[in-house]
Image 1 (tube, rainbow, N blue to C red):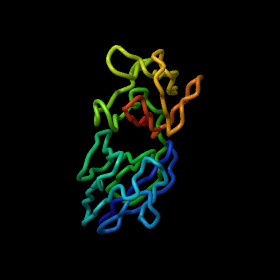
Image 2: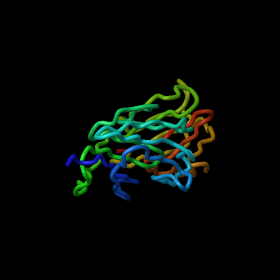
Image 3: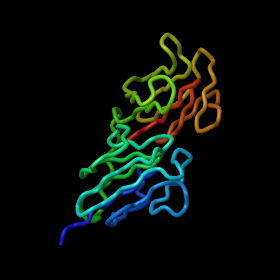
Image 4: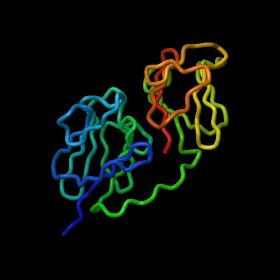
Length: 197
């Protein structure tokens, strides 16, 4: 008998659910009643679906506000391959083409696995790799906000330009705010999402 495809659902590196994918449609969204409910403001009420036929599974974004990312690339439709990582809001879904087995202990995050996704505004859809100790956010020549890296921890701070910086709909405190994967940042007219693998 063939093994059934499955997904592992993680939130902040912690496995919160494992499920085999049924034949046909599996709906994903914030609204109660979906087969997979993801409670996060960055997840649309009806966000995405995974359609499985035989051993093949196909992910489709349902015109969600903040998008669906496969292996760090925003996508509308995707034929899933073993090991594909799906990012929806703060949640990470790991696709497997086999039955659910023992969950591997996650390896320590590599520093290059942190990035910002531009959700709206200038450079919408772009991925910004966080490779430096200090990353400046804002238009060229300006520093509206700063991201400071200490080890594998990233802190969002207001820049010298004094622009309004928002994280998850709240102003960033004067001392800065430590980010967790999935946080939504607003700097001026630009919305970004922080991702750390």
